[in-house]
Image 1 (tube, rainbow, N blue to C red):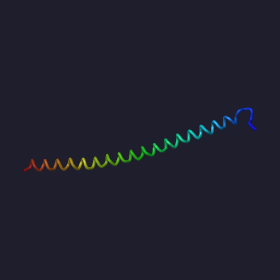
Image 2: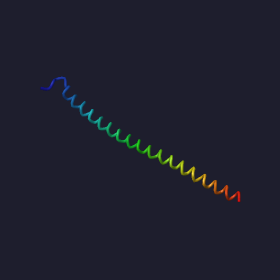
Image 3: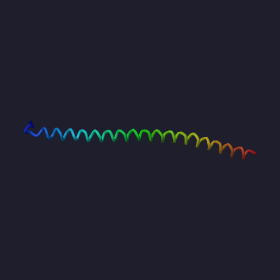
Image 4: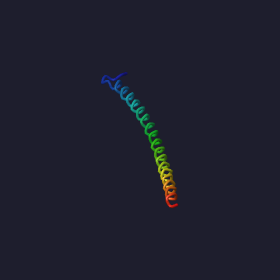
Length: 70
């Protein structure tokens, strides 16, 4: 028996909206996880670039220094 105040209809609407919002939340959560992975990869790449780039510069400077000393 449906109540005359219309709550039965509104309760279905509220539940549907909660399900929709939950789906949106799960989608955003997945996207945030992917962004965290991407940031971690970028941090590793930046660190490697810094280490090897700095090392390469040191090697070039040492070669130039040895050529100028001779």
